[in-house]
Length: 490
Image (cartoon, rainbow, N blue to C red; front, side, top):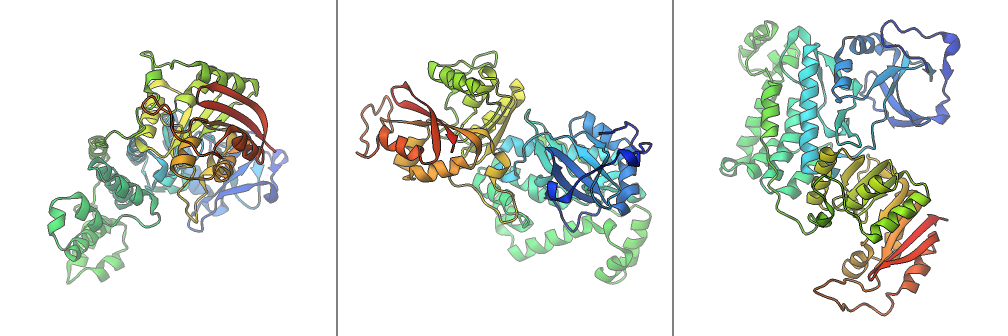
């Protein structure tokens, strides 16, 4: 691959061009409304093909210093020109592959908040160079394995005309970041997650104020809707054509607004990113403690390392013996097992999922605090959120091995899920190995030392079902109520 730090001055010798066959690539996004190109994967590389008619626009963007500053501040992935050739595109860029993609409805409160702050910081810096982003949705943000949110959509940057201080994506930012965070902070966690997962339909302004504002409850919905439609349309007047402003504005106000717009003094257009940053930073998570958010807390040491147990030590030993370097854990709570595997088993990257938002939020903040190579995500592997036009979680998060520890007894005996279903769903997350535990005593605890379990609930039953899906590599009883099964996909 040929690269040069001077983007505009970079020239590729045609003789050195490396032709890529269309059949060997995997399109990541190919949207009709992306004017500069499309993103695809080739040999584990994340590449972006730039259309011929966008060549000058992209070269200007890449050479102005904006992308360099964003890369330096860990807000945009390192990007460079390549010598690849696909079809008739002007050139192909390579973006550093920073991590697995998780979606906004799979983020915890702190992840949403940090993604919002990253989007604002990107635009604050972009304004210095005469740019802004035309999008503000969370699908343009990817977290790396150290918890840093990156804005990844090169095609979202557009030039600002006449040094304008507004932001075309302001309304989208309010609906997709500010409203969900405020709802969450007020205890409306479910509504917040719904707002995040309902794309492409953003939470209506009047619906938010009916729920999130005391006064909003007493104002007629029709009046609220009319007010917010007018307000946000006015905030975007500077982006409307003069003809549209005159046509849509009553009486002679249109001509006045056009005159003010052309002089760049039209009121209520300016957006202060510093003010928005302060507003987002001021939103606090008021979620109460959940059932599982303190699970495994006793393993934490004062220096940030984790204390292990003989059971965990053996799991780490087996992981190391098999040479596993990348794992995904389902039902992983705060990520203690994932962190122990990184700490003691040579695992390089871990993805830890759980349905408990509070536990995942603790996991994420620990990643930031202790610099762990771990990606947390709010995912219920047994009942995942599925969107027709989004990639399912197993395809995005699949790793060399999947771990599901101290989990099956709750799913089988409490939630009444079949073992076949559990194994089928876990199998989707692994390309090779599975680590799973059978609890022969069922829902055993100090308070309930002799729980009643069904007659069919035996180690023999578990093993025979397990062998339908995996070849057993290890079967060991690690403590009184933990029998570890390690398998390989048949």
